[in-house]
Image (cartoon, rainbow, N blue to C red; front, side, top):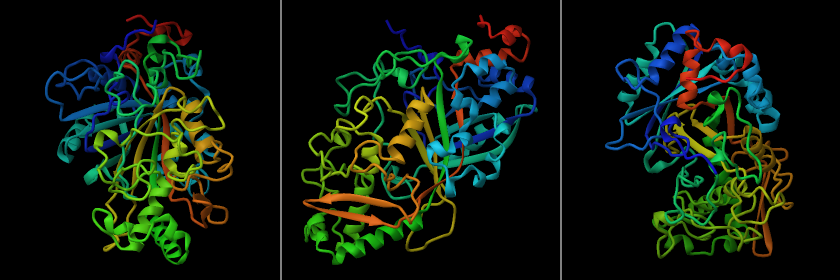
Amino acid sequence: MEPAINWPDLQGNILRGYRKHFVRHLVLTVDRPAAACRWLADATSGDDSRTPQITTAQPWSGDKPTSCVNIGLTASGLAKLGVSPASIASFPHEFVAGMPSRSKLIGDTGPSDPSGWKREWQDHERIHLMISVHADNAAIRAAVADRIMAASGAFRLLAALDGEDFPGGKVHFGYRDSISQPQFYGVHGPDNRRDDQPLVEIGAMLLGYATPVEDIRWRVPSPHVLGFNGSFNAFRVLEQQVEQFEQFLSECADRLMTDPVGKRLLPPGEEKKWTPPMSRRDALREMVAAKMLGRWYNGVPLEMSPHSPSPQPPIGEEKLNDYGYSHDPDGQRCPIGSHMRRSNPRDAKIVQRNTNHARRIIRRGIPYGPMYDPALPVKAERGLLGSFMCASLTSQFEALQYDWTNLGLIDPRITGTNDPILGNNEPLHSRFTFPVGEEKVTFRGFPHFIHTRGGAYLFQPSISAIRYLASLGDGKAARKSSGAAYVD
């Protein structure tokens, strides 16, 4: 039998999100390990007067707190706090090696190569931990972050990364985000699911439990108290090339305005029935954007409404995730190569037949930088601060990036092509194709619209594990050099 979920021992924001509108990620190096260990002890003491407390997954009994705090550590951060080499060696090799060393596997080449990352991400060994502050407003975010940084001599700040939700839950490319997430056994009941996809075993996110892969459990690093109930986070700073993306949509729409296939893609006059009505060119721009993602800008799935973002009768909020692809094997409604269908093939027949639901990950992201206004374009860096959480970086996050995003090993009809939005495309070879009846539309010559500007593989320990790490600073875990189990 599976152990019951010990909610107070889990960090929050893994199995269930906070839905806070402001975030600050503090990227830190440990200056004084003993002081850092004292901060970890204070942050799990239950006494908020000492320092902001690390938020657990315990359900809130009253009003939601105005802020939440979580922590993730790199392999070098664990070593800096005193975790033994034997213990660190028990962690997955990709985590120990770090994100920059995996660049070719996850598509971080060309403009995303680690050699071109922001300064704070250049020396991977100096990145020890990231403390994330989620808050209701910017003032609370700043106040909580300042209290954390007041920890005497514990940390040195490498970067403070601020993110803020846009109205309507949209991101820089104009799409509504955070609609589809896995739902888990023991977390979500079968009667309140928003879709017919199978519930996912919590071992897809937490170490020590059954996983979606039959008879497979991911190894729990030693000592058990350090690894159990932990999770991994592929944290990414993803710069979005919004102007290039908008220009590409315009070029595609201009071509479709004169190509007879455009009339079959979007029947003439259909755009006048949309809410609000659009010019034909604007509607074709939005149609291309929907084909690339797999949803309209407002979140309505192409699979449920292939010709309009405003179907009648309307699709309710609770139904936006309730669909599959099994009745659309050729991608007439939602292209096989679209971002959504690549990332989560749902019930479609795919080449790697046992992986439809085995690579589910939690995606939590928030925009950074000013919203793009095509009427008043302002040159600025803008993008997404993304956390991609799972129990196995190589079998989930990296497999998604390598097999599905950048090789198309999901269906032979798209093999050799990259995800049109997230993929590592370059103009000489890029290609996005989708069927329109008996014909096909192919767009070529587009660049990589998203550039990685930094990132790290983080381990998100349980509350028990954080207390274990805290104990390394005062000699309680002197046996650490042998990797022996810690007893509280």
